[in-house]
Length: 414
Image 1: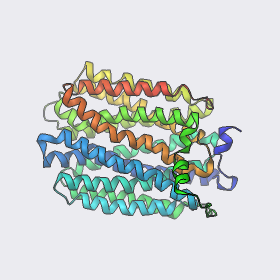
Image 2: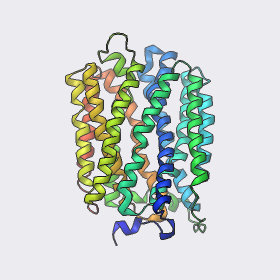
Image 3: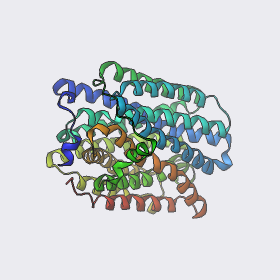
Image 4: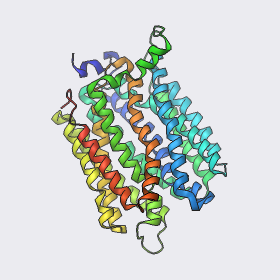
C-alpha cells in the first residue's frame, strides 16, 4: 500500500471547483493571521517590550522567554490536534483558540515585568497552537494528494502575506504595545470567524475505542516510527532551528551588528526588510509548489532550498552592511518560501494514516515549535560566548545544510 493511498482524504471530503478555491482563500486568511501574530510579535513587539524593561540583559531574557514559551507551543499543538481528530471537527478548536489568544494578548499588553511578559507569551503560544493544529489539518482533510503541492503553495503565501502585515502592524504600534497586541488579537479572531462561518466541518466521527493511557502515549508519537515521516520530521526541525536561531534575533542584529544608514532605526529597518523578504518568499512559494506538482517531485525542491538557506548566511558574515543584509534577507526568503511550501506537501504525503492527520501534523509541528525552544538558548549562548553575531550566522547556516541532507533518506516520495 502506498503512502498516497494512506493519506488520501475521503471522497466526500474533497472540495472541487469553486468550493476548492473558496477553501484555499479561507486557509490563506487563517494562516496569514496566525503568522502575522507569530512574526509581528516575535520579531518586533516582544523584543521591544523586553528591551524597554531590561535593556542590559535583553539578549539573554529574550532567549529565556522565547525558549520557555516554545515549550507550550510544542506541547499544545499535537495535543489539540489529537483532540480534534477524536471528533473530526476543526472549527470549534479554530474559534476557541483564537478567542483564547485574544485574552492572552490583552494580558500581554498590560504587563510590565519580564516574568509576566513570559507568562503572557506562553499563554499566547499555547492558545495559538490550538488554533494552528486545527487549521493545519484542513489540507490533509480536504485536498487530494495530487494537489497538495499547489495547495501548500497557496497556503504558503500566508507566510509572506502574514509576515509582512504582522511586521508592518508591529512597527507602527511598537510605541503603544497595548494597542499593538489588541490589533493582533482582533486579526486572528476575525480570521477564525470567517473560517468557522464559511468552511463547514466534516460530519462527526464515531467515538474512538477506549484505550489505556500507555497506549495513548505510544500512539501519540507512533508516526515517528515510520521511516520517511521520521526523516521529514528531522529535516524540518533542523531547517527551522537554523532559521529561527538567526531571525529570532533580527532586531538585535540590526541594532548591534549591522551598520545601518544614518537615521534608520532597527524597527524601521525591519519594516523595510520584511517586504523584501516576503516578496521573494511569495515568488518561490508559488513557483516551487506548482512546479513540484507538475514534475511530481518534492525532495529536490526541499533539499536545494534548504541548502540555499544555509549558504546565504555567509552574506552578512562577509558583508555586515545594510546592502548585505538586504541581499541576505531576499535570498533567505527565496529559500525558506520554497522549502516550507514543498516540504509541507511532502509531509502530507508521508503521513501514516489519514484518520490521524491532525495528530500527526501536530507531531510535525513539534519540528516547528520544538526548535524554537532550543533556538533562543542556542542563539544567546553563541552570541555571548563566541563573540557576537558572526558565529550565529555560521551556526544557523550549518543547521540548514544538515536539514538539506536529512531529506535524502526519504524513499516513498520522489
